[in-house]
Length: 121
Length: 105
Image 1: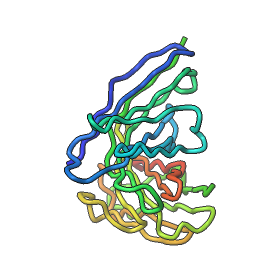
Image 2: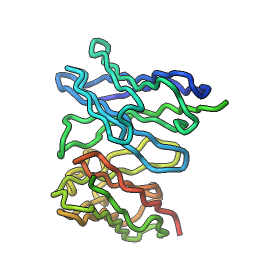
Image 3: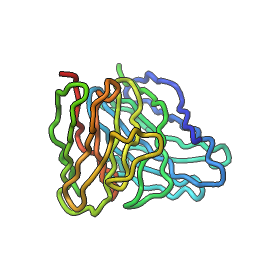
Image 4: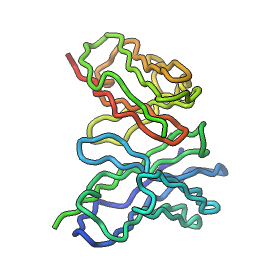
C-alpha cells in the first residue's frame, strides 16, 4: 500500500525560508503524481500544486503560483514544498497527497499525516 | 475558474439517519467530482471518486450521485464514526468545496 510520510512540525519567524518534505513508498511499478494541500486553522482544504517526480512536470494552483516552489527527487521518492520568505499567513497544516494521474479524472487517493507550519515573531 | 458550492455548511443528525450533502458546480464538470471525509485532527480520506465510484475499503452506506453541475453524497444510515467534515472536489482544477460539518444531534 502507498504511504506518504511527511517531515515534522516547524516553527519559523516571518521572512525565514522553509522546505518541507513528503516521502512516498509502496508504489510498486506504478508512477504517481505528488501534490500539496493547505489547511489554514479552522478552515477548508486548498490545493496548492502537484508534481510528477518522474520528469518534474509541475502544475500550480493560480492562487499559489509564485508563492511556493514544489520540487521532487525521484531517486529517493521524495517531494518538497518550499517558501523563500514566510509570512504569518503561511501558518497552516500542509498535507501531501498522491494521484495516479493529473487531469479531469484525478483524485487524491493517499494523504500524508500533515506537517504543521507555524510562522510567528 | 469552476467554483464549488456545498450545502449545507453544517448539519445535525442522529445515528441511523439518512443524510444527503449537496455540491453544486458553477459550470458543468461532467462526472469529475470527488468526495472526502475529514475527522478532527486527521488527514482527509477519499470516499468517492468520479461522482459515484466507491473508494476501496469505504463502507457501502456511502454513495455518490450526480453529473453536470449537481452532485450528492448520501450516507444511508449514520454511524458514530461518520461524524466529520465532508468536502467535495472538482477534478478539473482540484478546487474543493467549503466543507459540510456533520454533527451529532
